[in-house]
Length: 196
Image (tube, rainbow, N blue to C red; front, side, top):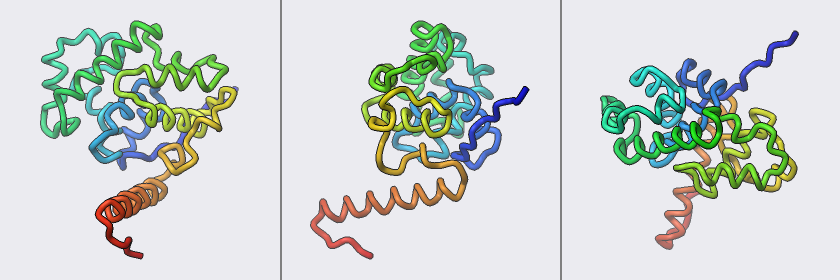
């Protein structure tokens, strides 16, 4: 019998963190929840740090932890996120949703879903996930995990995202492109001519 190998998702520069995000659906969702206003690498290191500091990555167990203890784990240096209080609350709410609505199985969010619009709705309903993040996760699920419900290609982003990143070199290229795009947007907003 052939063993299914985890997808290659070199998003952090830390092989243990990358392997955790690639094999554990909750770790993947926590990483995306954290992926705002901090570098990609730091966001996706978060699940491994949570596991080290709180002793588990089980959604039900994380949801049941005293919120003060949960926040303290986020504040411990180095902080898991630059906004430890609000992000600890958001991640704990995500874990509570997975535990209560999906039988403590993050993969149940997408397992067996045949319509991409329904999957997008489920992702958007998660704490910490908006329209853009739901579309990016939809792309990651399709391109990395082979989860391709009907219509997924039309809903997944048609621009570079983490769905297109497998290796460190691809991550660096993706981040350079993102920085260049943001610089061009800032220049346009200020009325300057973009350089290059």
